Image 1 (tube, one colour):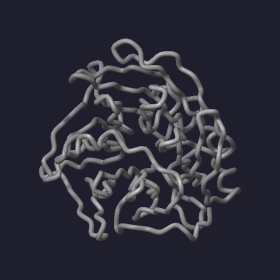
Image 2 (cartoon, rainbow, N blue to C red):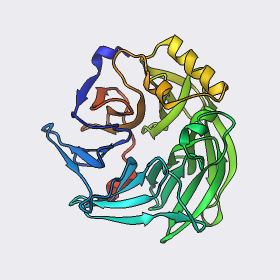
Image 3 (cartoon, rainbow, N blue to C red):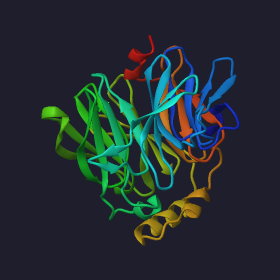
Length: 318
């Protein structure tokens, strides 16, 4: 796709890693200023910060009611999931698992059966020490009927996960394993029958994911700034990309040598996109695509001809 077709909405957002959209067309974006920014159809925006001055570092988010979000806390050393209300009230949702504090926490997903899935990319602190294919200490938490438990472990940087309503499996991006892994949901929600659904190529580090109404899986790749669509049969299509070969080669070498730094990741070479990290479908016909970006202060979007899947959390917004 021609990069000139990409437009932008919003401004002054800090590290808008995750973007979702509600049934009224309002964008909800994680904002490292310490809260959630909502962007309305008239392009006006509103930043909601915790009233108690808690310095949350929001990464993943979902909507759990018509007046609140669940937000993951991605601090340098602390994690957890918090319930942030639209009026700024905030309360802990999940801060411990197996009697241990949650490490910096990546993503939270509400599925079509009302369950909540949470990913922790790594137990390592600082997290940059996990940015390689040798690290496999990421895990997935299931929260169901008020109880939380680890249901899958030993993932290579567990990133966004999604319950696929078509085949009833959990899909999870293993970013530095450069693959998508699937699980069947077994008894009491435990994940079983682990399989590699897709292996990515040079420079492709999967981060965000979403499904369209045809069962296609859309994946954002950080570093290479690629948006990739993968069909159930494994057919791969590059929807767009905005990258520099030498930069990707440099990052690949750093990952291989276990020497990647935060500064390396921030020296992105691109024309328009700035490290795309998540994807949301919107618009009247669910054919508009919005992209979260780790290094931008606004949200890119464009029109395509494939309808996205309506998110499960819309049922919470009545």
